[in-house]
Image (cartoon, rainbow, N blue to C red):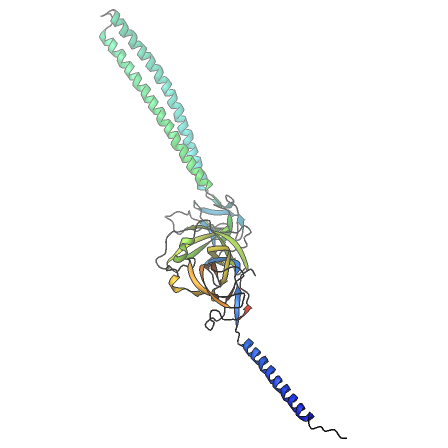
Length: 421
């Protein structure tokens, strides 16, 4: 008996149709899921981190010697010897040059002779006082005897004789006074002559030209045999011997802007960077004029830089970093993450004054949340967060115009410059 296959074919067709329908439904679910995933935006975020912030001001200045002077001679004369040359280092009091002034020796001998003559006059005056005192004693004694005798026996001695004795007594007394005056004058003359001698000796000492301070000879004007004029105000053509610079300590004169003047104080430590040497050196604010220039609206501030090894040369340019404000171990975020609150912004415009802003925070559930924060010190890239955020929070640093609060996003962490991750 032959079996019929007619009922099997419809079953196969039904099964094939069901399989095709099932396949189409699965593809649609996968495509819908992929489409939904592709619609979640990816945003760049940065973590709130702890960092040290400082607001700095960089100024450029030129190194100058702490002090520099053209060493002048105090007397006119010829250079007999010069002991230094350009580049020599000398200490305070070291002999730089010796001048030759022959007439100074004659002046000294003359003044010394005057002292000896005055001293002889003093000795003569002392002898004259002794003679005058002796004559006065005899004359005074004779007068007293005659006077006492005439008092005991009136009429015994003539009045004329008594008057003569009194006159001699008065004359002897006057001569003694004159001798004392002559001695005083002779003593004063000794003082005058000794002062003249000391002056000549001082002028002779000026033939030795010494270093007024420790430094480096940067220029030599005279050679052996050169005629040097005394460096006085009335002789403007006087030629110096050498130029001496104190380079062991250098100074920088910085034009500090008016806005930064309140932050400058004596003793403030600064960093001095020398591009020519590619090195940084410590410096200290030593003095300032305490007055603004009306033309530039700046205040000249001097920074002292130690230079014991003389590696720094006057004339080099340096960049000085003045730290105006500093915050250590504070919460920071990139400035690009903050939308400033115009209503709460500080009216004085100070970058170190409290301010308010808004940021978009990505929650642990990957949702966008808008927060108000309080801001502090601001630098070129970072800003201090005083309240509103915690360390480790993620804030959006990319474009935020298309984001809405509560929206689901995918966060991609970027590294913050200068932060501790």
